[in-house]
Length: 314
Image 1 (cartoon, helix red, strand yellow):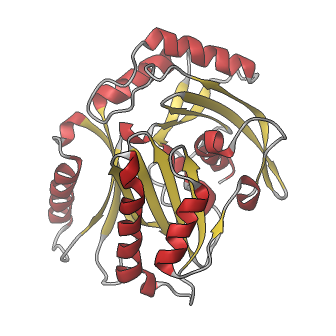
Image 2: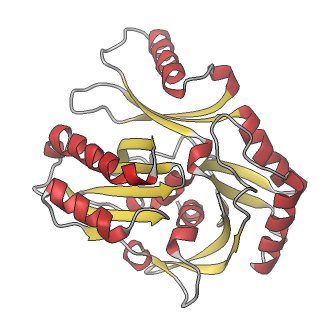
């Protein structure tokens, strides 16, 4: 199966990537090993909570010059000050992602494009000419319906981040939401069972369920901290009742990766096991082929940029 990012990105990717989020920025450069990947260079820095305030339709960066200076120091501390080409992951709340399913077969290519645009405008909730959109066709579902993956970022929001990168002389050839970088660790290698990514953040969480390298469900949920467990449970119920039985194996889901702050790994595992009635493995960095040094650098902090960096060897 083709990689779901294949048409969203350019055909050459650097081995260095930057991940941005509220309160943290992380830089990595990977090197390939027989057993997977290791960090050639890496560093992270704690940011002021107000410096990056992720939002889909409002300004994200409080001080462009300050963020540029922080990133310059971060690159210097990682030994990557001369690096010019980067892949970038943005905070979850800075973009929206849709999986679009066509209810009926459309006659012509033009008609299909019109329906897709109509669905995107409804899904994103803003006129499409205000967005930078990447669109990728997905394999048809079990009912032989066309499906598409669409990622949308407000042009004004994207311009803020690009202004910072341009001021540093950086070329950001690939800019994607955080969870699409993280999902590389689940889709990079073959897996006969479904796998689940749960990315927690201040605004709620994003959940992705993947089958045969492709996204089956991608859902961003904005909610209060005390609502996260109930929302996660509802998502798992939908999967269990509507999609799990379509898996080609007896056990529909086997792997769970929980990243970010605000959702305990053990609690997420308990909810998933109770809802799905299956034995799930919580994935760590070494389980997905990334060797981390014995330091304070956490997999949660670097999973997204490191995931994009693996595209260098794709």
